[in-house]
Length: 577
Image (tube, rainbow, N blue to C red; front, side, top):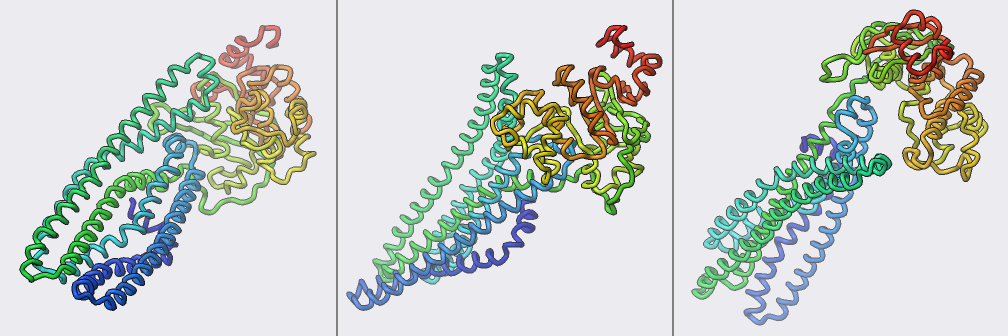
């Protein structure tokens, strides 16, 4: 998967990569040329006392060094541009793919894992590319060139390279083989600690309300200790790398000097040649070290690439139509025909054989016990899920054939758990209609019974809203979410238990305001309270995912035992009548 990702996302940066290779080649050639120049200065200048020769070749050596530094800086700059561009493109790809996911795929991966994949995992691949451009490209050039030039200097000492290079490769490979499983474990444990931290931050009020601080602290400590223990194991293995390299390097240097000294003493080898051979051996071993260091990064990047690939290769179950319907005639008529839905791996379907019609311009309520499938049912309408059987129609067209923007534009959804984004009251209300005027916002707030508390907030419409709406109460958050849907002015309103946090008086006033001001729109109300839906034109009663009653309040009291039980659990006989 790593190769596939790199091939796809490095293609736009081909010119920069070409620049990296070119300048790394130049700086590697310069590095390889320096020991030869140094040997010439020693053999022909120092030993003969020729100062002019030393100055001339010293100037050449200085020029080559400057060229090497300039090429190295340029290659690193181009490499950084490539790595940063790759990271940007990968994060963008993951973000857009997650944006296409239905609720099913998001739940399958989990939000903490998706965050880790788009940050930490992308960073691992980005770091691999950066290190490759700055180190790995030059490593084979230095290794091969060093071997060739070292053999030209002296062939009889070449057996030292044949021993030291395999010893270094085998030693480091043994360390790396033990690190790979730890890298895989590290990424999984980062997911866990991310999930726990998100849960604790989101549920801090619940934690404090139930005096569970110590339990949550210990839970986080255990996860943190597991990450720390894994990091320690990786760190201990990594700490072996440098000592192994230095041991092989120093032993090899001593061996070259030891055996080379005998050849210098008998006149078969010059001191400059011995010095050059030693420098080439060091360059070769350093190149092997860089290559093995990169080999250490590749497994971790490969694990990260697999995790990113899982996201990019996951197709959403809510597939946009190939030839979408882009226009609709009608005012929001909804029909369900033999609709069923089952979650992946579930033993029983959540919804079974649902068939009913929601007339346009009317109010239809859906009620049932907890777990009856009410929220799942309304999520099928905007295609947050797709029905596993049957068909959902909007104005006579299968929702799977509708252009997604057209479908979502006709629906104003107020979810069961209303969510507000960080910003202001106005920015949240304009989420569905960016060009809405202040007058439209105040009208929506008035209908949603939110004018009073918004007026009292410092700044009014420009009052700050924290992420998730945590700086307002649950009832205020619900009313702002309702106002956000009202600003959009859609043909179909879907209120998924959106009045549960409101007191009875506010609930009644809000419904009366809706009836007066949203005339002509289709309203689907999921509710638990009978008082919220008692005036609905049609009430659908769900039980175990099936329709067990349909009609008005008065009709259902006579024909539906399930509805009668719900009513009797909330109202007295006189109130129900």
